[in-house]
Image 1: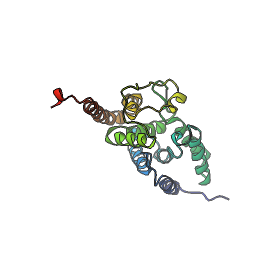
Image 2: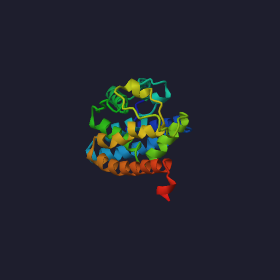
Image 3: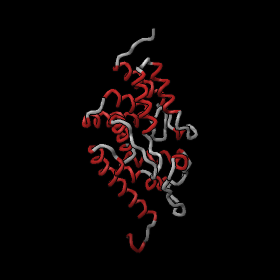
Length: 225
């Protein structure tokens, strides 16, 4: 009979697994992103009365196999999470709950609805989206853009407000466009009141950054000296 693990053992093994898996990741989707999302999700879960164990496991596994790095395959993340939790002999109800959160959590386009099925999913989604905002969000956006060999900005390429996940997955525009296509939209798409407060502050910082970026890009010696 398979070994039955305690909740603490499941957390410890999953933490080590994800640390090892993402140790050398350089696109902003590394272990430290996972840790920040895990810590924020637990903070939000405590405020919202969500199940801390479900939230922690889901946060740890939410980027186990991101579609962005697997040819747009949106099923590989849920499948890998299910496989891992099965290897720990986790309860089927827990596995199904975690897999549902991972399947639903991603941003899928400006005009695509991404409601979560549970409060646990809501706080994990909020935590993940908060890590896409503010100073760290800016750094992560440009790290990923560099990894994909995208220009920082091209004034001749307009942002696209996608109407489907398939269209969003194919987007390959400049990094600055990503702020308009996704990042500036997140403030108004938070689920919890606590996340909404944090998001406003991070959104404003990010907006100031882009305003400064565009001012420098369009530098005018007559007006800017």
